[in-house]
Length: 251
Length: 194
Image (cartoon, rainbow over all chains, first blue to last red; front, side, top):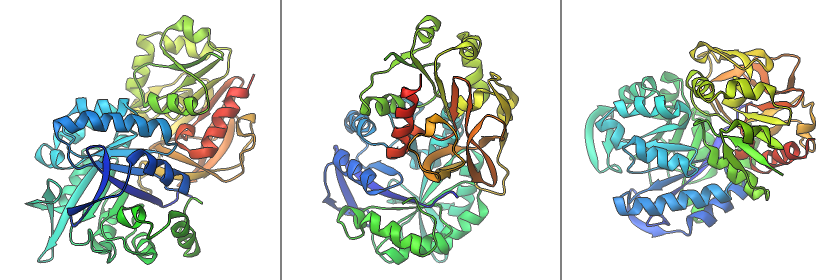
């Protein structure tokens, strides 16, 4: 049986790992390559690197980091942050990234999803969606959550699937950084309406939150950062407890 | 050992190269028929869309070369699928090495299958020291139907062939190069096949 995936997310700035709390107030949590290797050894199923600087200058540094991760890590990893061109995706994949994640650039020019899926295959195109629930309506936000739009989350997610994305990484801005659990209601709706895997992101604080997002949120994978980086939830313990809750995981 | 990865423009070749490097082996990327023929072992990768991958193979004459190779050949993911008779993806005729067809998962399940699933009913020297129900990393929307050449099975919607073998030709639907320590063991096993 296909297992539920546990995905540590490493936010990268100038080649170092950082994690924002509600997308601000950054804290340092180590060297990305060493962290990646440690997570792979602990049983993480995949890794996500999010380049939060994503300026032109930082790109060369990121490409170099991707190459080092690919050399040393024997599980799949995704790279996201500031990606808006076929050439950039090509460079990341050639340096050993397994998948890329696009976000704002897809909202600004949705055809990019089709172009990337056609050229590289849907399996390596993840579309990340940041959304916030305001007055009961889930609205897509851009640029790391700083720019609101009028786009409806579920409508956009459907379009993303139809255009050829292989997977959706959904971050609830209402939950991110709160450690109060994932946005399971919205996640379950996404999972029911779409036919591609959904990664839950934002809100992980304890083991029960992961149980809930797999059972109630019907998520295919769960992503978290600080609970892993600061050792609050060791991955082997998390997976063992998920198994005890009859959730299929790779042990 | 001369280890050649067929480089025809498809797939994440870097991760296969790095996986062998971690095992202490250098690899050569090539689409040169003479170099491929002279290899001790050949890796046939592939990620992407079947009909365009087959088109690239034909352009370099590799569609004629690969089925006639005598040394151990390992097809990975789309590489394995292209070694079958036919794939529904782009209604593409394959190399016909494995006597089976490749079909698409239905929409009763999420497509692509993405993540870690188990391989079982293992029967090949490719799986020496690999336990039944070992986890492997898979990303695919199409699957090979069972045939006499099935050497591993996996369940996703249906029970399908997650690895195939015909004489010196091996194929895995999963990515051993991305499947942690067990995947590395499978690559080691492939290297020790004579």
